[in-house]
Length: 382
Ligand code: NAD
Image (tube, rainbow, N blue to C red; front, side, top):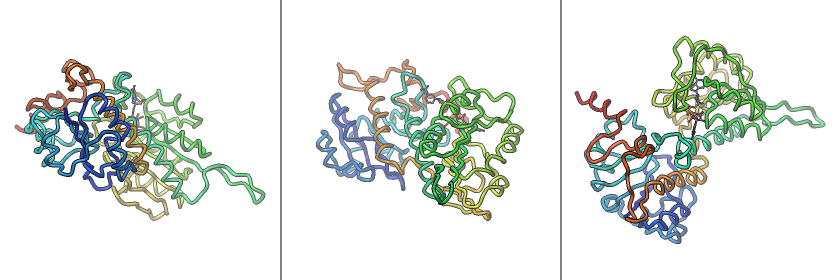
């Protein structure tokens, strides 16, 4: 069975779906691992290391795509790259399936089995394959590092003969995987941290990291069976914004990570709230790729507001730590393959009754098989 890993083609994407370590593990399973030459250069994995791990470096991506039984990729492919796939090939990548119905149709037409990393269930058994978590963790870390580099102040309290420097105040909105990592990182750097999340269970987790939980009574917020936040009503959002405005005004760094799975991210920082923030303050919006939490944020561009706050425009902060982001992402891919690997036949065995597969398999055998997207696609067609 041939596993092919092309180099990423999306601008600014530095991560890779294969590292020399995972390449060695996949080769050991019995896969023939092929990769596009240079695929790990941007994330600091040299061709030489891949070759030593048993990878065949190939020069013609279109031919390699057409011959592969399994393709690994970080970002969603283009329609042309999907059309080049061999019928029956398995394709693993982030797919953004809630917003990419046409791409899902393309996969079905190509008779490929598309697996969406976003849809891997967040269960204990699937933890090793959880790419959303592995990347969110590094995103949360990188958000603090990027903010610290821009703030022009020190983060920890410092007692010097020339006077005391007060600790930087950081406000983290959304205390899921990324938010908790941001809190832990800011804490290590000595900042004073406050945080808020709509899920009641987050309060204890925030406190256990040494941050203060901001109390805002929004009434019933709850969480889904999968552990995700529910969408708030417009009234609840307004109440939350009012409750957070004062904290934002006192903060030097605000990091927003608030997402609602499968939906556009809610706007939590309005222009009015930002106008009340200190000159020189820094805002990092980790939800920018899914619509953003911050009014006035521009993807790909830093914005300095009239009152001197900077809103960062980076939509993929994990790319600033691409070496480690690739290390854990590639490990997620390898864990998925190992789970579905059949030792006897030395091939992938896609058991459609498997709970993990049911969650993340989007197309198979010429059709959209995931019920969440199949119905949507039908509606779009009619
Ligand atoms: P996410 O990226 O979808 O959202 C990030 C955070 O934003 C969440 O904590 C969410 O509650 C919060 N949020 C949403 N709307 C908000 C609002 N209006 N104001 C403030 N915060 C808001 O979520 P995630 O970080 O990927 O994970 C969410 C949950 O799933 C967490 O509890 C996490 O521990 C859990 N999880 C479980 C597993 C597992 O069991 N294997 C794996 C990963 C995550």
